[in-house]
Amino acid sequence: FQHGIRPPPALHSETLHRGAVMLRSANYDSFMMGVNQRRKQSYPVVCLYATVALFGLLVVLALRMGDTSSEPQMAQMSRQDLMATLRSVPATVRFSPGFTSSMKKGCDTSSSSLHATRQRLVPRSTEVSKREQLKQIKRQDTFNRMGFKETRPIAEKEMFDEFQSDVIKDMRDNLYTMEKGDITFRLAQDFGFCWGVERAVQMAIEAKLHYGDKTIHITNEIIHNPGVNDKMANMGIKFIPVEDGVKNFDQVEKDDVVILPAFGATLEEMQLLTERGVQIVDTTCPWVSKVWNSVDAHTKGGMTSIIHGTWSHEETIATASFAEDYIIVKTMQEAEYVANYILNGGDKAEFMEKFKNAMSKGFDPDVHLKKLGLANQTTMYKKETRAIGQMLQKTMMQKYGPEELNKHYMEFDTICDATQERQDAIHELAEDKTIDFFLIVGGWDSSNTRHLVEIPEHQGIPAYHIDRAERLRPDNSIEYRTIDGEIKVLKNLLPEGKVRIGVTSGASTPDAYVADAMNRIVLMKSSIANTESTA
Image 1 (tube, rainbow, N blue to C red):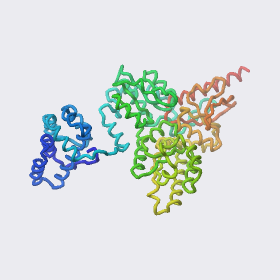
Image 2: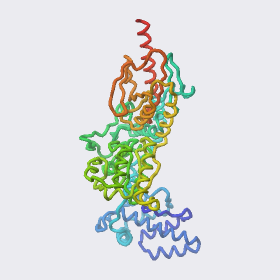
Image 3: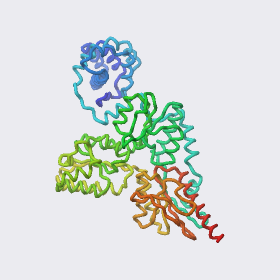
Image 4: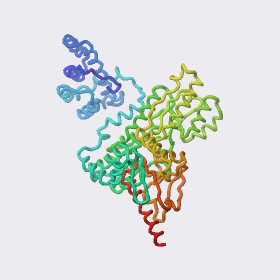
């Protein structure tokens, strides 16, 4: 089972029960005699699958028993250990009651025979892929990625009360427009909380309610939004401290609860937490997991993963941990630099210095750029990812010829749907040239929000990126983040008379936070009007 063998639907439970008898006695001849008798009553293919399924089960049991050189240790295998092993078999396999009963009765007497069987069947050294290592972690009883049904209704109500907004609902019902005196707000038709983010936050709340007084940690910000992360801290969830750029897990103890954020966590972090015996609550966005599947496909194809993303971003760090060989490019310019090296060679020392923080250990551009697979951080600007993909495809075609392209280049579309929908929506809204400026709400460290800012800016419309409503000040000034990452203050944000404002928000921003920002603008405008009338 662990190596991909699956029995057909027609496999009889009685056949698996006979497998239990074989495990108890380790008498292969007797078992095959039973199979031969069964063959008269069933299709031959069923019997073949039964034998293969039994072989897979023996492999699983043997792998779980430890070192082949330690027979006395194996002889002490308890019934509980063996039953735990059986429970780890994928849910697609169903055992009959008779099979389970036989295992309980026979496990203590079969260790020596199983030890000999393991020596026959299992290679002494098998390298397990990173994807398979992740699967093994997810099979543990201490791993939860489905949430907690008993606390879900309370969590859903808490999410609704704190994060929803009647103002935003009314705007949706009124063609995404709201007029307040001299101000007209126009809201992008796709904005705010995406499904993956909403799922992650709700699972964290469910976990807190479920585990009660247990110590709960989270390996990173749950999402890139300061208000939501403040809520996590106020609930008593502890953030893993970072010292000199390295997370310190010393405070995490056995039986603690650790939440993995929406960005995911590295394979090494998950392995450490599993070994420490903690309860893991995995809120990783499924779109991020999709990227991990892509880099696994690259590894299977003997390819280097070229990841379009920011090397210091939590999601990209997690994705890179599932690749064997990788290099991370943030921009088209960096991708073009790599392509030029592929075609023309170059200064290797310069290359290594340029990407010193963005490549796998032991990376050699003269060795690892011959076969490439493209992956990306899910929140990157989709047009840029596509352009990089087309450029790399052209590069590999030029280097190796069209007939060899599929051997040297692989690409999957792993841009998140929510990211693309929000980018498309602000593109459409920016076509309204009567808009004076855009207000974009989202965490300053939110990649998808930063890319939303770029779109109106590139069309010549000012855009101001704030991470919380308090950045809009009563004196008609705004503290905002530029595309280049600078934090600036602009005075006299709102002009006299009428003003039209485009509004959107990143995928990590609740509706209520957007409404708070718009209410602040209304108050600022009222304050200006009162000042003018007084004067």
